[in-house]
Image (cartoon, rainbow, N blue to C red; front, side):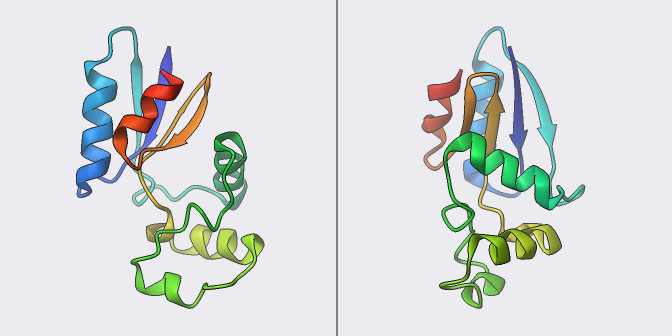
Length: 112
């Protein structure tokens, strides 16, 4: 099975989720450093759709740019995330069984 993790190596939760993936036998891990290679708006939207989440639920609220998005539509939030990927909450993990936001990191086990 292949797992893609939207990873920020500076984030402890992202590192914990990556450790879970690496410790699970039979998992081929692809690391997508979304801050270095920002995803398109369409890719972000597809990930949230697969995870059963709204863009608002995937917004990294502690970031300064998120404050201006309080009460914004999902379309506006997706536009902002595509322009500034630091607004994307991490880690996101995708497998052929679905996608999950790893908050807490153990949630990713649901799709392994």
